[in-house]
Image (tube, rainbow, N blue to C red; front, top):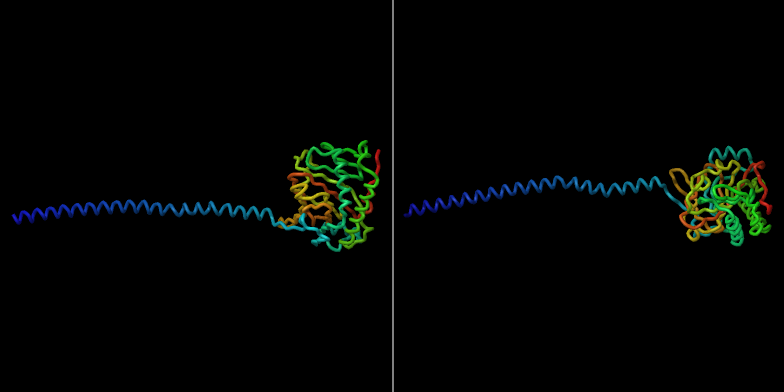
Length: 323
């Protein structure tokens, strides 16, 4: 009996050993499967991480690229500033030097950009704004930009121009004192150009066109409405040598958008924010490529008065002439 018991226990131990081996085998197989699953997922995970990182990096790179395309932006004059005078000297372009050398006494000491807020009185700006508003209300472009030239009488109307002096309503909105104020301001600006650019005031002359402008956010209907394209005044208007802009209302209050922007190398933008009574002056050559940003809302009013070195391109002051 003892031997049989021993044999029975031995068989039982062998069975238990077989069960343990089978169990260990199952554990190993499960471990291998789990390892495969885990390892395979660890193989996939780095790619997932690369893609997730790429998803974050690409937008950042795009922003950097877009910002570089947009260019750096600096301010020559902000709307809230009140400037006695601020000057940014720049190198004259070769084409401008070649042109002005024909008139030796009219060559600037330095080319540049100047902003002044104290030259034109507030009361004078009010009178000019009244002339602009009343005059342009007699016409107006179908698009976003309208002009009124007091010298020639040209007034935007629809998709063309009319002569404001042929309208009976003109005598109700203009008078001789308005034109006297205009002449006074033009003379102030003429002397300011002479002083700041180092030339005799009697060697520069008022030239055409000299005009009030009104800009809105209406869609352009003709090429005359597309005021936002970068341009060079000397190429657009052959007689221009010195350009001035007098702003008649305020950026950020009366209108949004419509900032004046010089565009330099590497797409660096130098910005002037319009302020009522603010005068900007600059040489008219290719050293001063510029544009006006699109007006987003409101109405922007300004007055362009420009001067030439060429006596043959001079025009007289606008006269009160109702037909």
